[in-house]
Image (tube, rainbow, N blue to C red; front, side):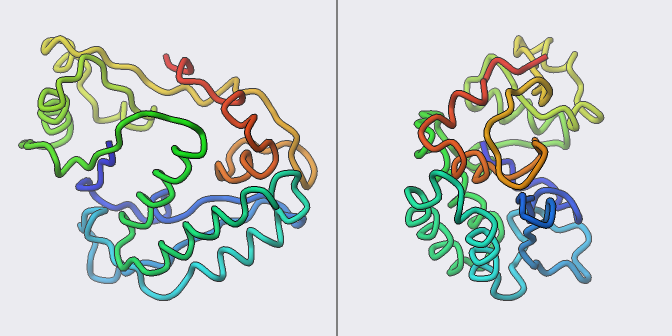
Length: 205
């Protein structure tokens, strides 16, 4: 589920990701409107100015010598062309999320949290969504644990699992020592169809 009715956070991963270049790891950031909009939700965030062509040139420069760049570049470029037409950040993120899921063969159904009726804040809101979806397990990133009430979910008969980003295998990578915290496109351009071998749903705690 794309949980985009939550508050947008500046300098987070909502509008940026990292690539590995010959000069080190660099951020690719989508410029968004934040002035005077301190409490806006992610699905309200507007893109401030054109960005896609600049990002694509940076990717091309960083990965053009990667083994599978030539194979996947045309497809990834179409995602950028589609995303460049979108005024809202959440729609851009959905384009890339769905595109990458298709390439990796992931059959997980992708929905927006707006699809489900919910009320309350934080854990109550998540629980309402989980119930509406008929879920028996909730999987989230570890940073959410700071505000999440696991007992509330357990009382409702829904288990809680937390991603553990440690221990993933390294893969052949360009530009020096291995770096885990980079875009999924790094894995795709470097390993191609073998990409799914380097991540696993079982990495939970």
